[in-house]
Amino acid sequence: MGGQPLERLRLYLRQLSPAARALLIAELERAVLCGDDVPGGDIVLQEVRRAMRDTGGAAPRIDNAARLFFRAVEPFVVDDASGRKHPGRIARTSLEPIWAWICRDLVPSGAQAFAQAVDVAFGANRAAACEQLACGFQDRIADHIQGALAAARSDEKARRRLVAQLGDKNVVDDVRDLGEILKARDALALLGERLPSHIRNLADAQLEGTKALLDSPATRRDGMLIHALIVVMGRLAAPWQLIRLATKAAKSDDAARVAATPYATAISIVLAEIERMVAELKTDLRRGSSVPVTSLLKSIHDAARGLRTELDLTIDSPWSRELATVRGEISSVLKAEIESMPGRVRRLLRPRPASEIASGAVLDAGDVADTETLIELVGVCRTYAGELAISEMTTRCYHELEQYLDTGIEALLEGVRSAGAADRPFRQSQIDAAVRFCAKVFGQEYASLLTKAAEIAGQRERKAAARA
Image 1: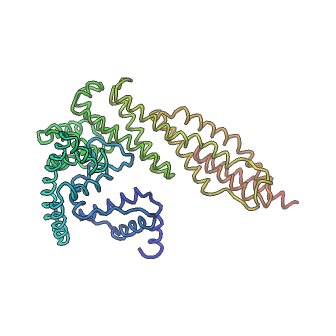
Image 2: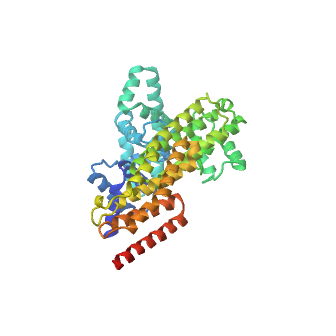
Image 3: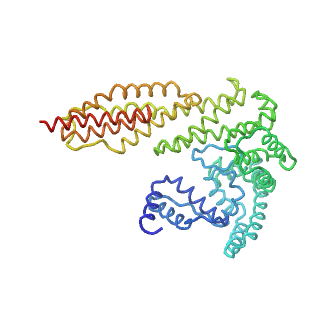
């Protein structure tokens, strides 16, 4: 990876957000610990850490013992910087403070001995020994967590001390989930082995079989169902289909009957997942990432529609109100992007007198590309507008854009026909931008016709100039 490829890698890593770089480091370190072969992984890990240092970020360094300890928890870890607590899941940002608490406050001598033993086994490439060490230490920590939480419930002073040690109430809640996951570790692992690796559609025989696994005695121990549901959700092509287990348990789509079953927590899990995707949508919009935004909009749309079609939600039900709040948040997030689009197109394509155009100037290529991406985003929003509560604004803004392009093209063509040597590059760049925008709005055939019309207009101008 010497030379230019390495420089391109460095440039790419510096353009990532700090959160994305932290996630990449965590995943690469996890792969190393699991013994997975990641081509070029050592080089990428080295360069992403350098990028973190160069940009002033603190690269997360969790040692071998911590990575091994948390490996059993990985299916339940969620990457969400919003600070909300996900039912049954543990925020990735909580892992470091939890490990620090274990080593500093919970079992300091035991944690030190575990870390030393892991380093020896890991250095000798003894995977089985590492696994045995991890299981024994996890069992011990699960018992200590249970004791610490019991003390916090019965003693206000102990509760305040626990929150102070962990730094945040959400981290305390994550510790509670960690204890439950570790207690149910073997049963959850067995469930994962029995489930299909990928469930394209949770229906019919797949639904029956999955429900039977969840209802088995090995899975129905206290506090385990929520984590078992998360294991199932990790196998679903469409995570929102987890709802179907709840309606199957209630033998009804009535929200009140579903809420009365233990499987009601599946609805809370799906709602939390939608909220996580909305938070991710905000981040991607700030970064101008169009491909993730398009994918997220589809996933959010499908999940919201799934809730509304799989469940009979009354207007005043808690789940209905929560979904309405989420849809309102989506509308608010997208509002500025959608409503800014017609204005950005007008600013770029506005006919200008020659006196306003600097000799040889052209439209900024970045502005044109960003506006094209924005048009594409609004087009995607039109597809999903109904479920995302953005129908009115999306229809209005897109119609405004269509009208402007339909009526404003002739003025741009006339500008090309009458252009002089100084302003011709700018007017041609406007036509080129209009072609790209029309391809998104009216289709490629319309854009091709516009390109030919612009070529004809330019030829007429050149012929007139030659005759003169």
